[in-house]
Length: 497
Image (cartoon, rainbow, N blue to C red; front, top):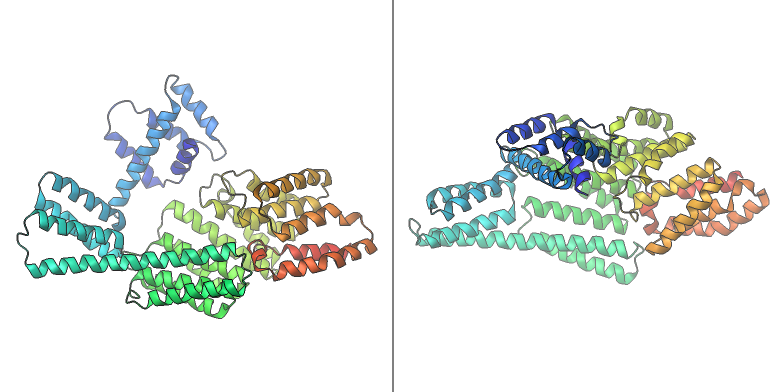
């Protein structure tokens, strides 16, 4: 819905971006009902929904279409943001110069158009934006051809052609690298990570192809090096070579660090890489290695960044700080950290990363669950079920819903659980995708062990012990168990009843 997207966009604007937007609006004439809508959204509290904003707008403009105004405001705000970014961001500047070159060339202002084209070419070379660099090289050749090759020697023409060909070759190699990484992720996802000899052979074939690509002369390209290290770390994790994967992680972090002072460094890309590293370390239970990479996120936050970036980065920072404390069983410290998290980062209107918001809510709830503050734990995890817009098949959503069931079991809300388990089973049948740990938790809750005799519980343990071991040995189950070892809760219930 455009209204929700518009609210999200406006709520993520910084103070300077709002001022620039209003200056941008002053240049436009006519009725500015869209500006009134902007002010309504800007002043609205975080708890106000889209319907309340619509009502306020319609009170002021009875005959106006809210949907059309919202669509126009979305476009104007976006145009304003693009204009701001084009003034200082090299990535935007290269496209801006390319567009200027196109406009000037269409009006036969060839020399001025060529100057702008060279600007775009220089920027794209510095950013190692190979798609843009090839395009500028190709357009420059078109320019020389259209001008009758005036003021250019044959050798200069050949050199320009070779530069274009070299860029295209590098672009092709990067595309192959992306394809191999995507195939690796796909095969590991749908093989269930429980690899047969045939599966391993397919993975080894991918590895050989990737190594061949990495040694074809493109290893000095930032993009190629990044993809190579991502592939290597992902591959090593999934074959269980954790020492090699950790080495690749550290090399990847060093690669970003060495490019920080250059135009091609993107804090968003770096944050994404750090988040991927931390998620992988969590998956393989290398918790002691996490603080080094957590500190890198903290360092990013010390630099001036956009508010949206800061929100997402802070969410990721708190997530992995809680992960480490929970693993170390420093639960009171985890509780104290959870209490310091700004409330805005735990609201569905925080507009950071959706998945990061769900993870943060999960870990705050898990912290409270582990110290047996079940009511407050339920308050946080319940937000996940009301978020909307999140894929219910994602592992973090599954983990959150399972934790929600455990909390209600501890609160002895058995009537609610009967309804919720039926709902859960319907969802599993509908999606056709389920994990063994989901089936186990539903079974244990349905048994209601608190009301069983010790002998009955011992029999239950004997029946389930084999299932629990199978879950622990199944790498596919790790996608949910990396958030919390639900097996440990089952063992505790069976040993204490």
